[in-house]
Amino acid sequence: MLRFKIKEQIANKEFNEGRRITIGEVAEAAGIHRMTLSKLINQKGYNTGTENLDRLCAFFECDIGELVEYIPNSTERNST
Image (spheres, helix red, strand yellow):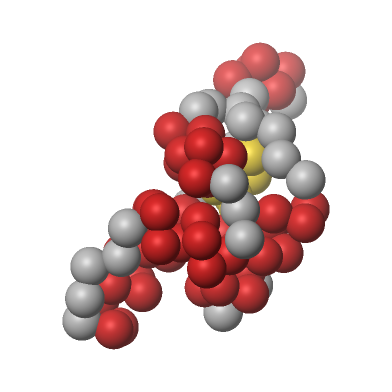
């Protein structure tokens, strides 16, 4: 499963810029629908396109590895 680390990226940006950043601001600046961004943040296993990931990487000025983390499913962990 892929886990999106958007909350962490928002927290880092807030710290670096010394101000509060809302989901709405991120969505608008990145050109992503607010509901899509909310699902990426809150819905486990949400599927999105690479275009959205590209836009988020550009907004946060980060690499994909700083935005997405691979977490093996529990069944995969038990079979190895």
